[in-house]
Image (cartoon, rainbow, N blue to C red; front, top):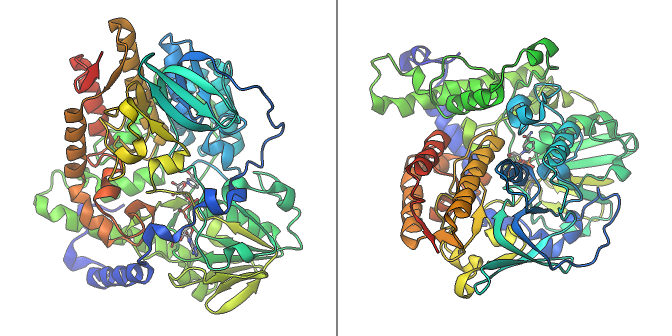
Length: 602
Ligand code: NDP
């Protein structure tokens, strides 16, 4: 384990200056002037890639024009947790509106083979104690997580009144009646006193703007719309229709890391096109010990979530309850505990953290050498950047897949795929003939909220959210917006971000339910953020991010740093920079004060 004592600069087994320089060179290879613009607008040009392949029974129904108290947009974890907490607080008249044919959000869409949660399932699956459920393994696979989403909906009776296979197309505030009008692609115009938006952070699949991408005559799909009719098999693998197929995967992020082992096991030939390698740490998944599960005491899930959150935010806990790759990495890299009780001056800490990072990434690179037999392939699979420049990955079968004779890593040395033709994929000046292209190219981040949501919001006096946020998001705590009464938002933006997303969703749900409950008891008709409170929160967002600016700029491009172009807007639209522990405490204090400070009520 890394700690301050093993990081004596005079006694290192590596040269920090050489590594820093190597990281800079690798970053510079990947920087490109078009940044986030390199990706296509899928909704406009390639809408077929976003269609739902999982619908069993296409919905036919008449448009609705009725009224409910609260509409929740989004039936993923965020919407489910919020609706569940609302039901617990006695709000019965709640309607979920969801684009998919069922609940689950990201776990509805991402059914690619091998999909599983990367955060421990005991803390990642929401509302486990409420449902009396413990996941079957430390990291649960997609079918179990989707089923758990359905179980939450059944437990809280959330199917009642829900509108599935329904996408919101517009939200309009009607001042006279103090109601939102929610318009949908099914012709509905629903009325609601309050609207909760839970649109999700990574929902709009994106395609790279590779020349010729529309010319390919073989089969292709995005990982979040997996075509099992073509590949055969299912989320557990066994892709039995690929035995005679040459398959290309474009992308090597967290999604590709999980599906490549299954493609490698099934395809006649698999070509993995890599621009930037991911960092692949140990996964060590294991079945749940029934005796351990039976012995869990009431309050166990909350305690475990908080323990993980404090630890992964750099705080100190007596015992690491989760003990996995996340807690190990973060404890070593950022824990102030490493420096407590030592006489290391504060200003030395960032440099020591950098050394710890080098050491950790050396370990990741050594792991590649230990597993991958071909030295050139192993070299190409090594990531050269600091650990949190990109999403760390954990997998025990991804790297061994490159030892298969039918699996070929096509490393593009940071340049990416050059072109796509009718027959295949071009990289390094060579055409690879393939029958199928799987785009593991991720989701839109950093584009306008209203573009990702797929609708605009018209608030008081005709204000449009797309215009109000054209220079960046403006809100109080990421949840309330001036000029948009009775609109409540749950998202990472301008809010506390944790590795364990559902934890933050639950904290926000409790906060929103508190505010709605106060509206009920105080007889509030409308409420919105004051302009002053919103301005102050935006200032605090910008101030809180400063310590992170240098780090982001030094990173290889990716969605964490606005594709290598971190700027005021990407920071303003990002999560709260002082971390989730501070953010959750801030919300708790705000509630304890009881004055709904910064919210204008009528
Ligand atoms: P990412 O955005 O992380 O990865 C996209 C990949 O496509 C990158 O490897 C990128 O390369 C590559 N790419 C883009 N354009 C090109 C091009 N022109 N040529 C070649 N390669 C290209 O998407 P993912 O779907 O993998 O993951 C998105 C996020 O979803 C994760 O970060 C994580 O938060 C979440 N996720 C979580 C999982 C879990 O919890 N288990 C599993 C999967 C995803 P480059 O890196 O150079 O940009």
